[in-house]
Amino acid sequence: MIRFHILGAGGAVPTPTHTPAAYLVTVDGDPVLVDPGPGALVRHVRCGEAPHGVDDLQYVLMTHLHPDHCADLVPLLFAAHSVVLQRTDTLHLIGPVGLAAYLESLRGLYGTWLEPRRRELAVRELIPGETVELPSGGRCESFAAHHPKDSFSRQPLGYRFLDTQGSVAVFSGDTEACPGLEQASRGADLLVVECSTPDHLATSGHMTPAAVADLCRSAQPKQTVLTHLYPAAAATDLEAIIARDWDGPVHQARDGDIFVVPKEKNPIRRDPGQE
Image (tube, rainbow, N blue to C red; front, side):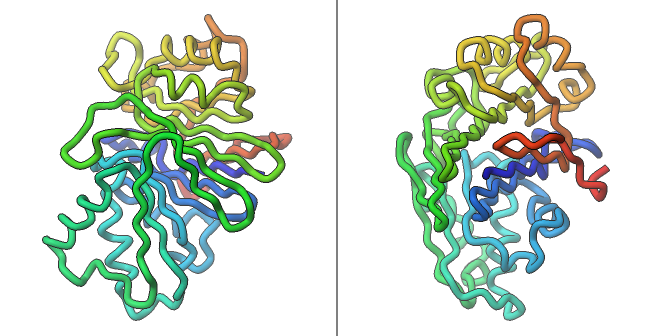
């Protein structure tokens, strides 16, 4: 089973219902925090799926290194330096090529305050096509996304999560339409795809309703969830726009929404604490 908890459904401009990127993806019981943007750590410990708080984290996965997707790496590592935390196994930080240099630059600012006190820190840089094997047998496959590059990460990534029963959930990361996203999304049980703006505000490196509809017609996902919504997108009925060109189920996410595959009777549930 794959459980996709959207802790932050917004972009870099937060609103009360759409805060910056943060996703808790649980594959066969293994939790993975994806894209810890600003405030992600607080939202993670409040979401109801982290009874031991920061100590519940073992895998942290990043699509790229823009601040709205990785700003809470500093609070996370600073927390791991605390004598309060008890976990002693390895903390895995995984992301695109450039992650190690990014962490080294943070150490230049904060020094040993970002060194976990009790845990080894394992940093792994992925290239498209590489796979992360999870303890319970599930896995996460990386693919190339198309998004403006920064001084650290030259190849943004998206991810395809697979459980041991063959269920598939795809997370686009930040990207415009591209072959990697289309191929990864084909036949997916769940496609969580960015839709940053309405079509009239289209921005290079991001998806719009028209681009999502095109992707869905080509890839035929069983369920589509729109995320990374900037204020104009969040205030627009994107579902109705996409429905003109695609008749599959599409849901416009807000913070706290939860989606499960295999699909449950009521796949969308919102954490009352995030209303």
